[in-house]
Length: 434
Ligand code: ZN
Image 1 (spheres, protein in one colour):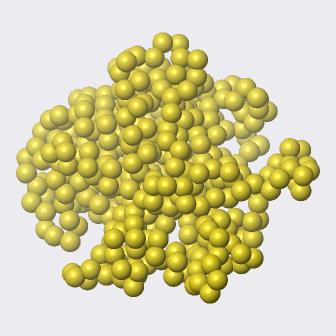
Image 2: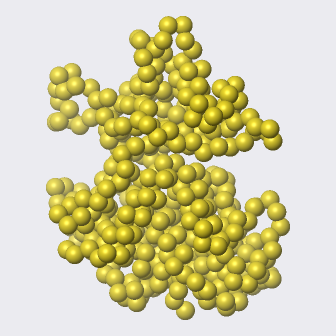
Image 3: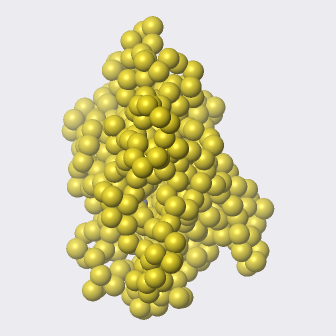
């Protein structure tokens, strides 16, 4: 298939975005930078807001960020057009007292965050990224940290000691077999102090001023295009930074919209969304209420606005993998580079209904992109996402969609270059359309 110049450029921009976003907090910073560069203004939650007509704003809460562009039509008449996605990806996180020496090596203890395919973390050039609290003149400050060089590793067990690995698959005990090798132990050295020193050096502070940290393990290998015509993209965290990128790009494409357009990117989706920053928390309802209040729309007006609103929950979808046909519902084979996927589940694991799917189909048709339908096998547990959570918090009609991808929750996932451009096109249509 021929990939357009624009689609290729969007995929390369996606790779840049993901590679600059090795943790949810970095993803928030990456999104914030793109928005600030294009005239958005940061609204602190702790201050009173003064919204201006035509204003474009962003709000950060932990690993979540919500951006919005005020519409030209009164909110009560136009409602909100909301795209949602999540900033977090499953993986490994360091425990608070991670470093320990044993048998001549220093290792770092990790906790499994969400549901990663653990075997994909073996034999990769891993490093650490996240947020670190340091003592500063103004008190304790939070600093973003991305260690660039490969720092840690999870070497596989040789096949000579694991003779059935190809028959049984690689199984890793989450407590005993995941600690990451960090270095050779030095005589008489305190492992924790040594690790703290690495963080301090990277942040150019004294080790005694490193108070605490929240660090994710990430893959230092950068994203690439691949395939006979470079029609595929591979990177870590495509689930769900690809949807974050598509939503933010679509919002930045939208100038002077008629309805108030919102792009809400949440942390903690992979662990159930129940947190102060997560989709299950108060964030989105708080912000929509404050936007309404800032526009002089009272409680009754807000209810009218919500009833006129629409939520597109964008999260990646499972593409058909021809090597594993038995894993799929045979009549819902979703193909890579065949367009956005509408996800349906009668048990409300996805928020899609017939009417909301129809509205998304209409948007695809207006944007000139093909679309596909996905349903999970009935004899397999179906995943879920933020769609049903936000829909039930807000009482807003909602559809769950996503771009097709392979190897969801692998450290190295793949998706289609044309699909990413198509998702940007349909989300742009959603924000723009009257
Ligand atoms: Zn996801």
